[in-house]
Length: 232
Image (cartoon, rainbow, N blue to C red; front, side, top):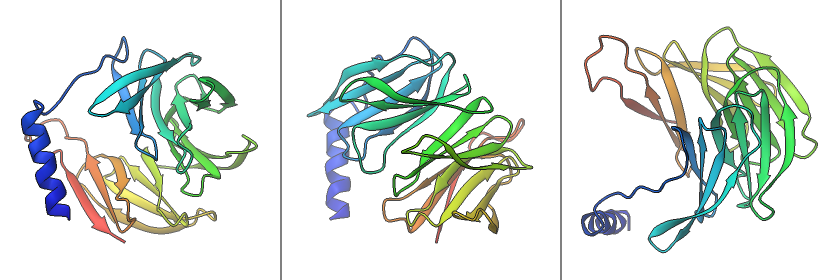
């Protein structure tokens, strides 16, 4: 089944020039994410806006542009099971929850710092947001109030829950992945993933594996800023 899918994707790329560009913003794009049903693609930009596209057959059609942030939209993510809700993290010290059905912001939550990363828990109950001061705040997705806050002594680059919602992962500036219990936020393990800054992390749909990526150090040969993966 997987090999058939791979062959079909190869054929599609050969017949459709491999990639297409869709204008979305007036400045660089910092984040993209698909909704849980795969019908919409959202993007966040340095131009302080988010855009949402609808996938129709083999092309993306721009649905709406979302304005309200006073600074760059550095990361966004969708609700894990509701394809109508997404949340944006901005340098303006707020996060905003948007509803594509009304095209409006349904909640603005003030935070203590300039936000650079965000994720929604698999059970949909909590939003975690990290700022430039390496503080991660856990916000109740219904009341929009802070439930917990954790200051870390290392550079926090990206954050994620595991699929079972009982562990919380952070990638850091030392090339490590820190794993905490959730909701206790007690350290479980630290994995040495890369020789330099560990930038990003993503779980596969089954939750069995996750992949990480590193930033190439100054003077490091091209091709060494790569990815790694491991299993739980």
